[in-house]
Length: 152
Image (cartoon, rainbow, N blue to C red; front, side, top):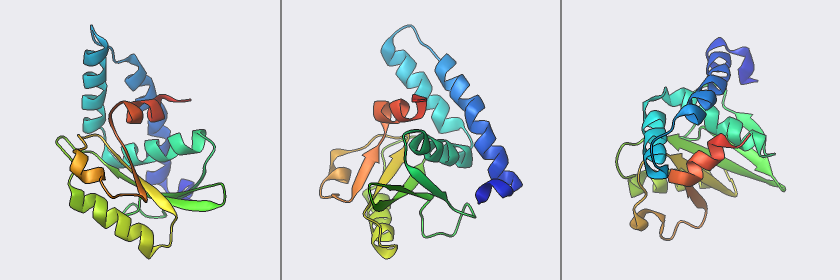
């Protein structure tokens, strides 16, 4: 549905270019490559990042339901379906550590929309205190995020 909107179509098409760029980023060590790639993700358009994450789940075989609008949907950036259950996606570009309150709000949104769980995908650091007692939310960041985005 969202492909019909020009801004959605542009951002969805832009993800392929960003994927090529991300793949081309290398450092002199694995650690430097990782740091450069995460730094790149923190700089791209947040809505392109959102589309990229949703596309990555679709490439992995999930059925995707994109929002018709980029804002105003209770904090959910999209919904994905697999094995008989709907899940929510929330994408955030952080430079520092994520806030537990953001993850808790996302968990509330999942309950509000009666979803089985969700994926909180971000570019920052994940303090251990954030993910404790978050059984319905899977946090994806760091190398797991890069693996998700680089999978074709």
